[in-house]
Amino acid sequence: MTKLLCATYEGLDAKKVDVELTLTKGLPSFSIVGSANALHASGSIERIKSALLSNEYKFPPKRITINLAPSDDFKKSGSQFDLSIALLISLEKIEEDFSSWFVFGELGLDGSVKENTQLYPLLLSLANQKLITKAVVPKEALAKLSKIPNIELYGVETLKEAKEMFENLSQSLPSVAEASIDFPSYEIAQQKYYYMKEYDEDFIDVKGQEVAKRAALIAAAGFHNILLEGSPGCGKSMIAQRLRYILPPMTISEILDVAKLDALNMKEPIFAPRRPMLSPHCSSTPASVLGGGNGKIGEVGLAHNGILFFDEIPHFSSKILESLREPLQENKIRIGRINQRISYPTSFLFVAAMNPCPCGNLLDEHKECRCNELEIQRYKNRLSEPFLDRIDLNVVMQNVSSSDKPSLSSKEMHKKVVQAHIFAKQRGQESFNGKMSDSEIAQYCVMDDNAKAVLEMAINRFALSFRSIKKLQKVARTIADLEESEMIQKSHLLEALSYRRR
Image (cartoon, rainbow, N blue to C red; front, top):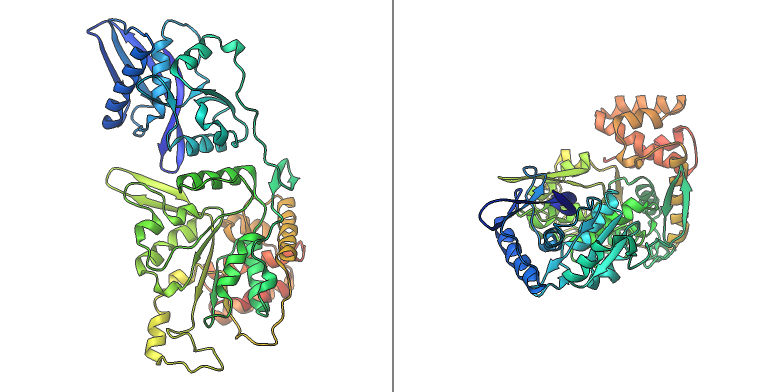
């Protein structure tokens, strides 16, 4: 029995598949087993037969069985299996070990090798999981696939060319050199972190709103969920849109994750350390935001490692808002269907914006609010207490004034975020402060005696829940990191308290 490697999707990640061949005595036949999708399998068989016959291959008078292993764990589908299956059949007389080779490609009826839509995200996912070092791929896809680092790619145009390559493996050379990521970086504990210095939208454009900008800086440095409340036009969306440019640097793994999600979202990946920002409209359906019944990833999953921005959050459906509680708390979302259960990672920075009342003028000194108390209460009640309890920073924005002036630029704010990131990584912390587990909070959120006294007073005075206490500790830890303080001090905890919901 000989085998090659290929891959398919299970949820969001690529899964390695062993493509195995056996030839046994019996009536001549050709079958694909191993939980292959019946419709795709029948189409593949016809394409493979035609490609082999067009290239002067004569089928032996035996039973040809292709097994896609592991057989029972998940269904395999996609035309990327064509080339690996056809190669195994055409090479069945060569007794050589090909088990370390990944082979991808859809076959034309004449034996030409083509790419399919799954190829790019599949290789990205395999590279991110460090499961692949070399692969045979369609030559037409080399320009795109060569951007994926740490893979040797061998491009082929036809089945005949692929067969000749495997018959002379010792003389085969990669078609392109390994790609690299060329951006500013620094290294901590043998891990490189990359960042960009371009700021397409700058905080220097936001005049005034010093409290909101300070909260945005804390949110970016620690990946803390933030809610901005204020009158229309006060700068809520401006601040949200500029946040992505001051987020912490990224590892190679995170860059590849973002590229994979871009490919799944039918966007051209740029392989740059720029975190994504997803901003669904309030009229979006639950399936488009959370994920569909066919296993398609929603915007919550696409925002992984970046920002998910909900503008006018009270206008989103209650089903979407309540379903967000799981990804905000556990940093993953589970979508259950009749025959499958899919889990997506959702470690994002959640940013929400809302008006203080339905007409938006409640906090405006110059405009009259047209809402009565019942309408205002009904509007605010669209956000439940359990949902609001997942928000780390609550900011009521100031009115716009002609005397407002610009202050910090995105470049200056990003520099502070990078310094805080380095400070946190140097103490051995892996997670962002906003995503710390209980054990990490106990290890890294160390307070001095004055801070402990303030926390005790706050617990008694405000009847804080366990979640609220942990939230305060995490925000205070980020504020301390921005000042490069080893311990959380009284001033850090007091500032964290100032952002709690009233």
